[in-house]
Length: 351
Image 1 (cartoon, rainbow, N blue to C red):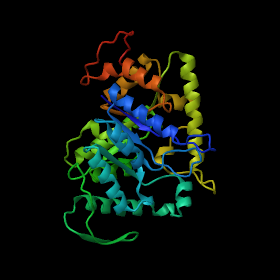
Image 2: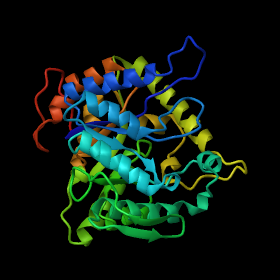
Image 3: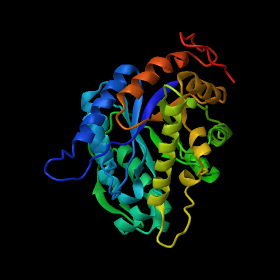
Image 4: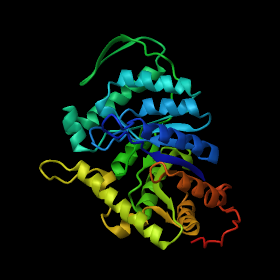
């Protein structure tokens, strides 16, 4: 199995005695250690106007991480295309791909938070059309060796050639977040890789994985399980009390997520990301929380379904958790599927 990381750094607001950059610097140090421990990638979110300091300029942050690492894949999960000038974004993404030696994974989405669209003064009902046009322009920007013009519904460019070129050819891998059958089908037909969210149940995540696999194979293409990144919250607990506390914290954070998406009229979001069951039991089911053996049992279930690529979201900046997972869980899943390594801890039961 391949294990990467998923999440966000925080930059707190405050007075002259608060270093707002500390959270970003600590996150970069965390990422550097993750590479040394054997993690494969880091995927960073994009959010705006939250009031609690989530990452807004993800490519800028990843550029700093790129300078401090040498092998770690640098992913966005996701950049919201409807909010960005696609040509400027193509230039910025190509720049980090070059500087990192071709390590960029370009994860994109159409957005789901009403407040963010409202604050940008962009109608949320335009998200799909803006996403489609933006993606077309970005792909052409990365692959065209000749000058071109574009006159669309939202963007107009005249006689441009986009520089610099990307290091990866024909362009960095494109990842898309999706959850509904129709959205997953579109990801497959666009030739993109799939990002699955961390809140869906184990059963629903496996169902979505299989749907994408079927769509790829229907088109006559070879399915690679590494083309699906499954996000999961993770926490290596010492005992049942620690595990229970972590689940309660996760449940509270999920409620904050739902509140952040609330529209003024009280309309319920149709985003698949927010379709999870809002119960304490569901919060525990969807996460990789527990002792190493408990976590390994869940990973074995995912692996038996064909899932091989995990993106892990842990307590912000917790080096202890990062190290514990690398030491006590990852080695058992280092080999090919069906060849679980023997561990010194009591063996878990492969369900």
